[in-house]
Length: 534
Image (cartoon, rainbow, N blue to C red; front, side):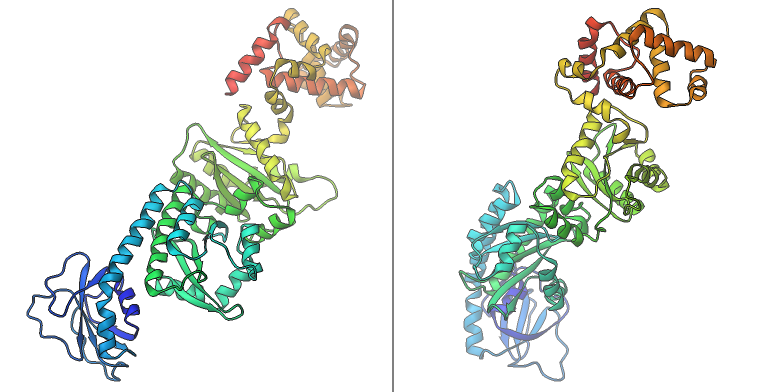
């Protein structure tokens, strides 16, 4: 057991340590005439006045000085602890004699917890096993206040706790109560779990902070309900918390505050939050602005990156965009970026997104230096659309389309639709066969009717600009437009025909290019496009 646990079991009310004493060291009690220490380190108990050491005992000596420490403290010898306790000397000795049994109990329970850790494949399974060992209902919460797991039955009169379990997050109100009461600060300062009293419900809670590599990753809280919590149990809670910290880090569940991505964003993308109201409430916890326009961005490299490298890139991206959250999905960085509020009744978000992302030099430089490409979803204002927008990005990436360094979905929606088709028949339904015939005619005769039609759509009502883009004389341009009507029955003055040209050429682009193929080879070429994208 820890030396601090031993002092608690001895009902020590005050103590002062000499050099060489570590309250976090593992110790075991020995008789007054104990021999040389081993692992764990040995402690002995003496009464009022240091024992005359002859060098044989090298452990820690607990020196009982009465019910209170003297007003003028003497020099504390090295590896000595002056202790004050309400217990009489005889009671203190009796409690001290029980410490070896407690040590055995602790050692057994720690082994059970470690075995539970080794055999658990997720944090919930570990929580269930820890509950069986600790004997009281518990909750494991990450640094974003996301409830990672709960085990045991909490009382029905704790509607706040039951709501947390149902919603999956600790509310801002509950967390504020803990902060205001100073409980979390006390735990952080002490470096170990503490017991606090909830006066309103007459309940005692154990609160512990989970740390891993000196980083705060969440909490393990336990309610004293089914069995009384002893000082020894506090040490077991700390040990369970340390094991949970390893699992949280390994599973990438620590949360934004621990530098492991936003649990809120991960839950939103997984569609695991109940409704828009819940999503907004949890997003508010992350300090992201509400009532904004958002876009999802996925960063993709030519090769898979190590998680530590992704985290480093995430820190740079979120530094470039102050209002942003990130998470890692399928070993790729996904970022939610706030684009600001809409300033018009119309939909100006496409232009805003292109300005915000394309002109943020720190972001663009991060992409270029790390060989990454950014794929951007359509902007959205309702958080409930986030899962669908994430699927847009996934489809955009899998389509194989790329405008370095940033690719925007809305510029390629038709090619993406083509890439999603499961059969050539589905693609065939999208194609206006007049446009296909025009493409095949151009290939056979070396003409440029399809390109002329595309430039006409691109520059509506501007024959001069269309002719300039084609690098031909205006008369040549008008000749081609007339021939398109004559040969292919497409009237470029008609809105429906212009739409047929625009949509079909985009579909053909998604199949690999507008200068196409022989009809009989189109299914084969479509399959090649699928192979190329995958």
